[in-house]
Image (cartoon, rainbow, N blue to C red; front, side):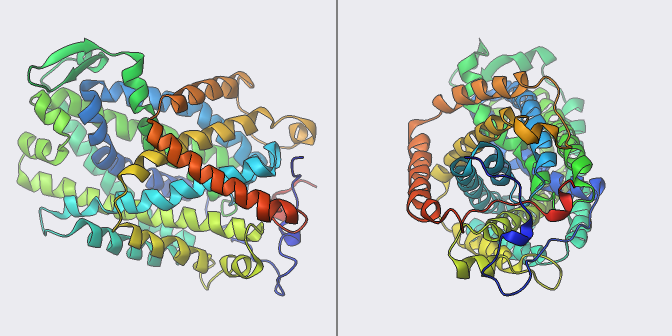
Length: 466
């Protein structure tokens, strides 16, 4: 049986103090800046895209474009559900309320898997882009970035919106420089974007096939998935019924442009296929200009990675805060994770997210990186199923932003996501399946027997209709 929406005040009866609430302090602009910083287009461009170049060559831009188009129905689902159920719990609050508590718990586990792994993976890339100034160990540098991001995450959200906004401007400038230089040094025509070219013993050209695109779609989805951060911030957005959808859709549109335009320019401007499939964008920038410009771009990317770390820690701490408020854990853990600090941030949850992230920088995350792509796809699948159920019963009459072409949008999305999942590498599916099994056992042995006092998914009282 699915949960109904209930006030926060009922969610922590065992606590002696009144339940803590996050403060509404940001509007669409601040929310979009924070959400864009989580997407961190420059980090995606310089850290994730090179892997796609190595496997797809000139088809990378096409794969990313298809991924961005696929994200439109995903964004519609997030916009409708995020305005219907504006909770810092994000996906798990939406899925629990509409598709049942077990489904919501699995959505929480998938989102937690993503948010715990991604920040340290990206943070370790900082050392590569600081290399023009100083040579540092990637693991220690990544750990330092995670600690700095954790400290920043303890501050007021409005202060972080300004910090991340400044960094975001710098990374967009860096992406713009790459785009201008790439287009100015074009070596091939636009037709190359729809053909498959990759460096080998003998450069060869093949048409793009569905399997080639599918092989990179999980990473392409991951490249723009940060727009979902808007729903995690919904308890701190002013007028969430309106502003969540605006923030989600604006972020997807801006991030898609910031990523796709430079990728297109790089594809056209790379001097040869070896340079393109090698994915060393900094070297290409230096070849197009000089070392000074290359250094500037590299430093902007380093700042972008730090920026992403700050926002991801903010996002992830809100997920843990909401899970504690909704009583997913034993009482002492719930009470600790739901504490708010001097600046209104969930400080214990912030430390729980940030400190382990620093240690994960010393672990080989290659397999976990692949698992993250599977987890993102599975998470989107659960959200799409919830979107199919969003208009039944009293949910259909509640005030919320409503997506166009419902239910065709979520149905199409479910079909595509299932196909993407079954085409992923078996080892990644096994890892994710194992984690899902453990999570299901925790649900069966601890949460379900205590369903009257545990996993009581809620939304803030002041967002509910009278």
